[in-house]
Amino acid sequence: MKSIQDIRRQNINDIIDCDFNGVQTRLAEKLGTQANLVNRWARGQKVVGDTVARKIEKAANKPSNWLDVDHSLSAVAIPQEEITPSDTGQLAAHNLEAWMQNNRDLSSQGKLSKASGVAQATINRMLNNEVSVSISTLEAIASAFGHRGYELLIHPRDPSTIHYDRARYALLPESEKSKIESYVDFVIVQNGKTQE
Image (tube, rainbow, N blue to C red; front, top):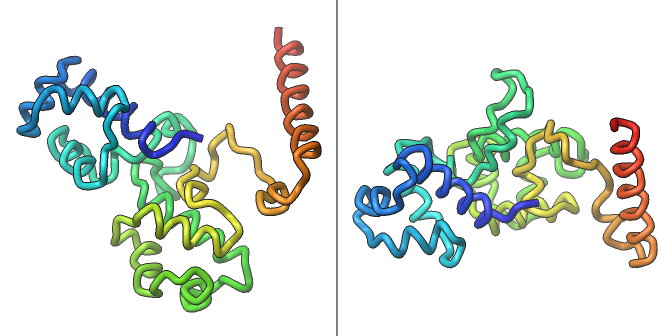
């Protein structure tokens, strides 16, 4: 799974290539900043914070939170009316709603607020895609379900996702985890041979 910084770096490079003809200085001029700073963002040598990410999106005429989405997921077929993978907030809201529907103990905003320590108003705004949620908020909410924050940002039909109980997997001894990883590798290799 890519980190948010890896996703932002890739998207900055895509913006430079597609919207600024591959010239970093053009993006720097549009942002009113130094070209070496854009170069450091593009190479992953400097962290791209939320404020900078929103400025880059505005400079490139992209929607809010566009920089935070792994656009390789856009190739996944999904009905337009269900969810569009180009909006991180909508993706997180969709996944959170599904988690709440499948968990009796955390089925209401009040219950989730108590379990996660996140204000009910914040959860409500997140479910309505009215707020840009921080990574720490995603982590707090996801941990109440026994998950990690990044899982709220995984497209529901991402073909590379394996569905399993991550909390129970984490409790396994390393030798058992190794067996699972070996089995997955074995199935992938066997499938590759049958396709040749």
